[in-house]
Length: 603
Image (cartoon, rainbow, N blue to C red; front, side, top):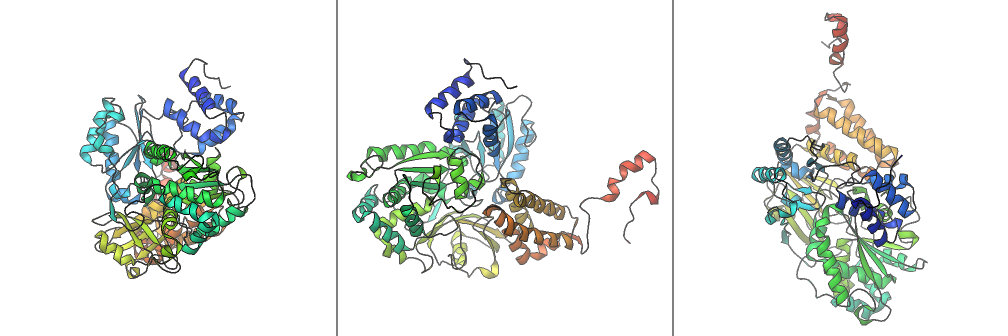
C-alpha cells in the first residue's frame, strides 16, 4: 500500500500548489509532473498517489503517463543528471570517448546512479545542437555544447565539489545560431505586428486566399498544403478552434526550429496569430520539446511583450473581437510526440500515443475541438506571406515547392549551421557552400528521410525531388555507412512508443540483426531478414515512426552494399551466438573436452 506524503512535507506542499495553480485539470498532468520533478529531483510514488487523488484519476493513469516519457524518473537519478547527445554526428565528434572519460572520472557506470546519489550519466537521442557538438543536457534544463577533454575534466571537478550548475562558467551555456546563409526567413525580422495588421486588413477569407495562392506546404516533413489545412479547420464545426505550433523538433540532425524560436520568436507567434485570425481560434499552444527547456523563459518574455503591445490577448491590433492567446507546453523526451496526433494527446496530459485517423485533428483535435497543427518554420512563412502576399511567395522556389527552406547542416563540413535557400537548390550547391569535401553521402531529412549518394548530388531540394524536414547530415568517405545506419536503427528502437507490436518488436529485431553484423557474425541470410523487416514495418505499424524506421537501412543497403558485405562472415546462415562457446559450461560440468563434446566445425 502506498502511503500519502505527510501534509507538511515539501513534496505534499508542492503537489497541492501545482493542483491549485493548474485548477486540478488532468490535461495539465504532464506539465505538473515536469514541475514536480524539477522541484524534487524525481517523482516519488507517494507524490504520484497524491497527485492522482487531487486530479480525480487513477494512480495507474498517472504511472502510465510517467512511464511513457523518458525525462520522468520514478527513482532517484542523481543531483546532476547528465545526458550526452547520442546522435551520429556527436559520435563523429568524439562524444562516446568523452562520455567514457567523464564516467571514469566520476566513478559511475553509464545509465546508473552513483551510490552516493550525486550523479548519473546516460544518453539522450539528440539535443538539437548537431552544429556545435558534442553536446549534453544537464538536469533536463541546461545545454552544454562544444565539449572537449578539458571541459569534461572541469565538469567532473565541479560535480565532485557540488557546485550548482547555475554557477558553472556561463560561457559553457552559450549556444550559437550559426546562420551561414539567410534568405527571407532568417534575414532581417519584420517589425512586430506589421504582418498581423496586413492580415486583419485582408479579413480572414482574404488572408486564407493568400496562403492558398502561395501554395505554402508544411515544413515539418509531410508537406501538407497549409491553405487546405486551415480551410478544413475553419469550416469544421465546433465551439472552439485551436492553433498548435509543433516545436517538438526531435529528428536527429535538425536544429532550425531552435534558432527560429530563439531569435525569431516574434515571427512564430505572429504566424500563429494570423492562423487564429483565419480560423477564428481563441487559444493556441506551442509544444516545445523538452530538450529546449532552456528557451522557455525567453519565449515567455516575448509573449508578455506581445500582450503588452496588443498583439496577443483581447482586441488584437485594435480589432474588436479578435481575441487570441498562446500557452507553452513542455514535452518530456518523447520523439513520437512530433507526430501531430501524439502531440495532441500529450497536450491533453496523456501518453503521447498517435491516434487512429480519421477523424483528423482539423475536425477532432485538442479536447475534441478542430485543431490546426503546423511547424515552427511554417508559421514564420505565413507571417512573410501576410506581409508580402501569396503571389510573392509563389514566385520563389519551384511550382510544386514554393518559397524557401532552411537546412540544418552538420557532419563532415567546415561550416555547419543553418542555410536558407529557395526550393529547387542543388544538393551539390549546399555542399559547396558549407565546405564539404570528399563527401560520399548526405542524409536528408534525418533518419526518417532519404540517404543520397554522391552520384545524386545534382538532385534538387523540393517535394518533387528530395523532400526534407530540415536535417542535412554530411558524411565523407572516411565514414562507415553501416555504422550510420546502425545508429539510426538504435534511434528508432529507442524512440518507439511501444503501442503497436510491429514497431515495438520490429525495431528491436532490426537492432539485433545490425548488432550481429557489427559483431562479425553476419550472413547473407541476415540481409534478407532485414529486407523482410523493412517490408513488415513499412506496411503494418500504427504510425509513421515505425513505417519510416527502415528508410535509412534500405537506402544504405542499396547504395553502400559493400560496407554491409564487409560484415558478412558467409553467404549462408550464421547463428547469432557461438554455439561451441555456449557448450563450455556443459563441458566443464561433465569434465569432457574431447572432440565429440564440441560443435562440429565446418571444414
